[in-house]
Image 1 (cartoon, one colour):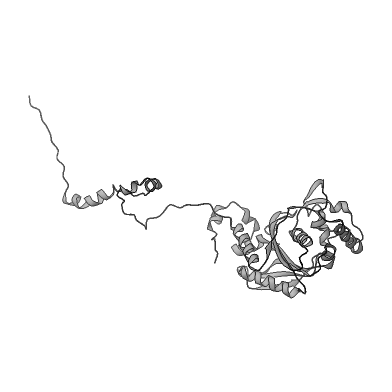
Image 2 (tube, one colour; image 1 turned 135 degrees about the vertical axis):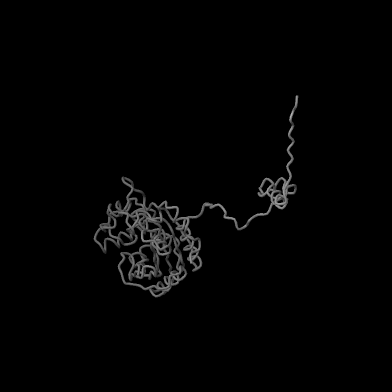
Amino acid sequence: MLTEVKDAQVSLTDTGRRMQPALEEEQLERRLTTEMITSGKWREVKLGALDVEAPAPVAFPGRVHPLINVIEEIKEIFVGLGFEEIDGPIVQTGFWNFDALFIPQDHSAREMQDTFYISRHKQDIPASNEQKRKVAKVHMGGWGSWNIEEARRVVLRTHTTPVTLKHLAESKASVGRFFSVGRVFRNEKPSYKHLVEFHQVEGVATAPRLSLRDLMGLQKEFYSRMGIKKVKFWPTFFPYTEPSLQSMVYNESMKKWVELFGMGVFRPEVTRPLGIKNPVLAWGGGIERIAMLRFGLDDVRELYSSRLSWLRSVPRCPL
């Protein structure tokens, strides 16, 4: 009986021998992990070469919203100009939101279609009896009537001015620069340039012999630090400032002038009842409008969309 036995022998050819070092290199460790570093294993392994030109996987780490970056930039500019930041409640009485600002109680801005009232709720006015008496006197002398129950109504603030005005009335500062940044609410139909809720920045400055020229200079310096160079001012009307101006800035991408901040000097009917003796310069506006100019948007609602492609593409420090 015959049995056939086969014995196979394998050996590298010359080509294989030339490839052997590369094949051995592939067995080297290519990842240096945290565990290897902390345990000291990295001393025992042989690390292979890395191709630093190889494409890396795309990663989307968490980041701050572009609008928050603009808000922080604005705060830094105000602090750099010598302003002190103040804050106050979102919920205000009609007294501080309207009456103290010489806005008549039958003014259209106080109607339900323009203002968010907290229904069936009133609260005590956070002001002294003397302040309430003098504000009432100004209204009855200038507009004919004033009802304290209307002043006790509670609203979601329509601007940040009640915060800055109340601070001036309480601090009695004869010289000072203050600013506030916060959310405000308007009962408006949302559109490409209007929101129901948005952020507003406001600055006030008080000192003896301040004038409208000082206010225009502060505005131009603020815009300059925001990278806006072309600025002009138009006369306008606000119930609580006189004289009043509207600032206009030139948008290079749109090739036209865009309305931005309102500004003016507080009327005596606003400052005197609250015991504020020196002139008060005030200006403010919506931060979302600045963000639209910064990011080249034509619809303010885009700032609050969930379009990740846009959110991820906005640079932290735009050119």
